[in-house]
Image 1: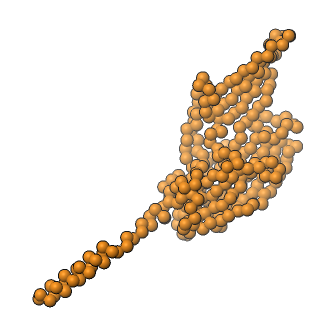
Image 2: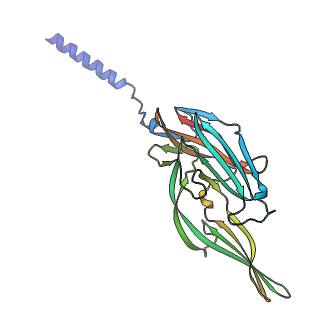
Length: 272
C-alpha cells in the first residue's frame, strides 16, 4: 500500500513538472479573424509592375475613358478612370480636368464606413475700380472644411465611402464590407476618387456702372478621397470554399505617360 502511495506521488510530481514547463498553446483567433495592413505573414502575396488598360478616347466629345483590371490570387478587380469636364459644363477646346475614378469586384467586398459630411460655403471677392466701371470678382466654394471662421455650415449628409488604411493598421472580419456603395454616377463602380468640380467666371451682373463676375468650385467631398501620388491601403473580405478570408490591396493614384491620373495596384495580400 505504501509503495502504491509513493508511486502515485511520484506520478503526480512528474505531471506537475511537465505542466509547469509546457509551452502555452498559441491563440489562433487573432490570426484568423484579423489581419494587419502591410504584413505578409500567413498571406498569399501578389505584386504588380503594371496592368493593361483599354483607352477610349472621346476627347472631341468631352471625355477619355480608361478600363483595366487585375486579380488577387484569382479574385478579379476592375478599375476605371473617366476624365471629362466638370458636371454640367462643356466648352469645346477647354482642357479636361474632372476625374471619376472607381473600382468594382464580383469576388471581393471592400471595407467601408458611413460618415457624416459637412458642407460649408466660402466666398472671396475682389473689386477693381476702372475709369468707367467697377469690376467685382466673386469666388465661391463649397468645401468639406471651414476655409475661414466666418464660413457657415450649409448642410450635412451621410455617405458610404471606402476606408483608406495606413500600414500596420488592422482589419477585422466584423468590420463592414460591401461590393457596391450605390453611388449615382455609376452604380457598378465604387468611387475611389472624384475631382472637385470647377466652373470659370461667368457674368452675374452687367450694368453701366458695375460688372459682376462669379466663379464656383464644388469641393464638398474633397475630404472623402485618398491623396493623389501617395500610397494607401484598402481592405477586403471574400467568401469561398475556404470560408471568409481577409486581404488588403496597396494602391496609388498617379499620372500615367499621358499625364492622366489612374489607380495603380502596387501589391496585394489575401489570407491563405
